[in-house]
Length: 543
Picture 1 (cartoon, one colour):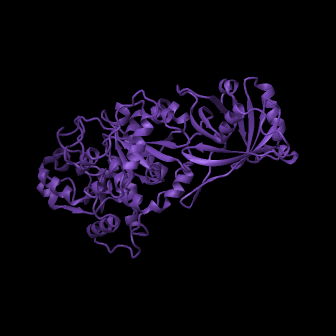
Picture 2: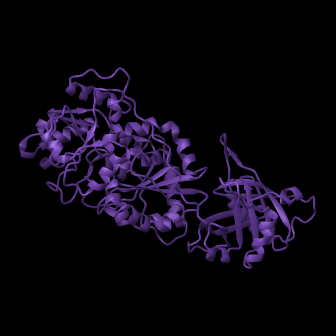
């Protein structure tokens, strides 16, 4: 259904066109398909009514079902990234999905008036199955890819919406069925969030709509709960997945179509498909995966996932993956224009004067949860403090537990060596109660005997900490500048470095004018930090 929504710009601005949607019976995923239509407020008609009526044009994104019962010229649109796999239990069994003779030419006759394909090689493959259907085919390209390509310049905007910052956005892509990434490696999302340092990587997951529908949104969220709590982004099934793909640095994938879309964007592709009966040898997908670095089953060595991902990112060369996408997608940048020409020819109408333009992908909705508690590793060398944060449930050895007061659960708060609180935005209500950073830090140390350092995050560059000695210290954080970009660290990560450094150097600074400078290495970047006694005015700042 989402494929049909992506081709709507072909008819944009044409008052002569009325757009109606119906659902061919027999799909296992019909409930979610109807929900997708309702979300965009489209008009639907029941299947029985659709069978009784005649239409000037019928667009379908799949040959499956009783399309032949609909009256009117039928256009079969590109679905997925070509013909790369077989689906067990459907049609002839040994045919590529989308090329099964049982669907392409039921009763020996082509089911569609026009087959719109994404690449010339697909015409040859169709001809091997149904020469009559191949004679009615035309190469237009892929309308869904058009949206991704048109939105490339919005990459920074999407990353800002996701809260990626200077981190590497690592996307897991799972198709559906028994050979999908989630079916074979169900623990990989949690493994990724637990093993990858939080301040260096941001994990995300793209799940095929069929898998979402089969599992159910609630059950999927519950299965992924540990990973979601640790910061995993679960991309939405329409538009949002594509925006996340544009924003990505690397994609860990099975044999689903998302891999070839990632290749078209020239992203680093890491294969996590371990073979089976579905992937068709010699297909564009098979070639892409065969020439991509492979992610073996996660081992027991700490950092093995990060090392594998870093090696793949370092080895990537511009244009390397795009070459494989070029064997699956033709007419890149012109798919909607070509499709408009074909469908308006069938309609016998002149197309609108305005060009058919792919609609930009909207920014993804902020959905990532910032973990409320971290197991923090620390290494101190002189004035440099290296910090690596992992979710609190990680079994990795840690220097201390850091927790966000008021967000983390009480169990973590009671166990934390560092408790911090971020300054809140003013509430909508005129009735407010606020506390000074001096009073709040003192209260926290009184309430939590196991806490050694309490801190208020007043801004991305300013914090105030209080240790068990009772002294208030102001922490000023400078950003990292690299290649014309200014990268800010999460102040909470800096506070972990300060907590560890103060524990190793008790009593500094002490004089009213003393200033101590340290350097925090976070996510592989260096952030200068200045510690000084808090002034009376700073102590009165509020959280």
